[in-house]
Amino acid sequence: MDLENIDTEKWLELITDYGLKIIGAILIWIIGSWIIKKIIKGTKKVMSKRDYDESLQKFLMNLLGWILKIILIITILGTLGVETTSFAAILAAAGLAIGMALQGSLGNFAGGVLIMIFKPFKIGDLIEAQGELGVVKEIEIFTTKLTGLSNREIIIPNGSLSNGNIINYTTEGTRRVDLVYGVSYDADIKQTKEVIMEVLTSHPKVLKDPAPAVTVLELADSSVNFAVRPWCHTDHYWDVYFDVTENVKLALDKAGIEIPYPHQVEIQKKG
Image (cartoon, rainbow, N blue to C red):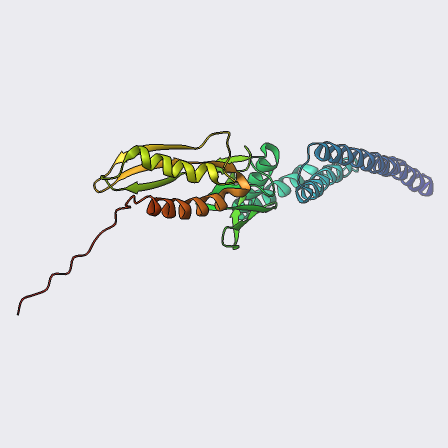
């Protein structure tokens, strides 16, 4: 028996077997990488057309790229004859552990994705959510930043933001200002309505359509309360709110219509 010929045959067999596997793995890597680039490029185009936030696009592209590359590597290892079942199990266990550790962050990330998809608000909108009121400054992956009315920065996690009630004051373009004024029971209701309505119709930022309204709201214990409802553009809300409040007080005083308030009577003790 020629030992040299046997060793040569084994080496040729091994080289042929593993050589084909290596060539196949290289081809899979080249083709797989090309397919991954096409998938990422196509996904990016779709997201750009739908105006997804740029920061979210980058994050999703990186995440998608890593997932596809991991799948490609597992496929290549399987082609080379490596047992991938245990490898996949290790990855799954690691993913589960990471997911449990970052459960809150993943919830916030999912909330950010939902906000980007359904777009309940956009940057520059005045919203009220999670007990906070402010203008949307930035929509990030995990949080949304608002600028409060006192110029304070408010950071709300996207998870709780997407699962809670959101009031968007900007969407419709106009907003109703809800005010309530109380006058004395001795005051004439018709005159009071005319005085307040004059204040509303003379204000340059109060809209004619929808028309402002002044109605009797309730007969309270010590006053007749009027619901005053002017409309304005969203940007003018606080101007109208403060101006009308001041001007109604001045107009009622000028008309001799009393606004009730608690009186303190001082009783002197006799010596």
